[in-house]
Image 1 (spheres, helix red, strand yellow):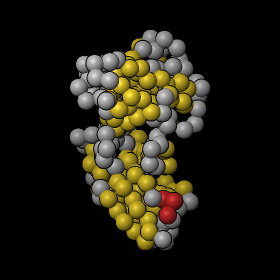
Image 2 (cartoon, chains in turn orange, yellow):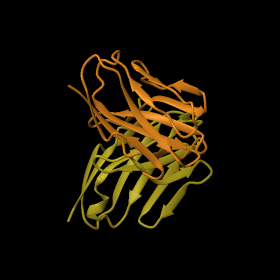
Image 3 (cartoon, chains in turn brown, purple):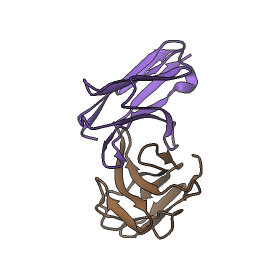
Image 4 (cartoon, helix red, strand yellow):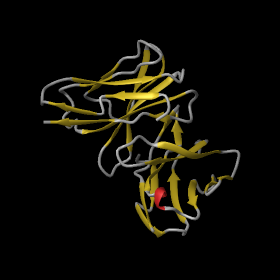
Length: 111
Length: 111
């Protein structure tokens, strides 16, 4: 897990509610990433940010939003527009463009 | 990801045997090839990586081989142990600065 923390570990949300997942890193990495993982599947990229105040959509950005106001923090908001939000969410960071280091993940369940 | 294929999807071996997992990719411009290990309920951890200027890299019981002409790279684990049981992902860098994850291989090492 290195110096990347994600909170909370488990999160429950009612349908129609927005929810924000936290990701913090103390590795002084410039780049940060959000992935979604469904059972038996690989990781799919939601958003990534290579520098403060800038971010790009990944492969499955619809229904999600992010911000990057500080180098250390990259919160992900799962909006009510995301039709199937129940999943395991992983945050990662990297110094360059190669090796990514992952946090412990947040498991989101929609009730 | 759709441009990354990983085989097999599951692999069962006896303790002490060797295990090999293969990853094929489509982008000939790829130049970074990592392997990640994910234990149940945790974030993936980098176990070994290779860059396009070398064909093989070894770290104790783990090795990665790269064939750029055929566009595939493989993870080799020798003298497997029960603690090697996990899901393994290849994640070549296909475009820009992002990694594209395969769907994973579940390795089960039986005592």
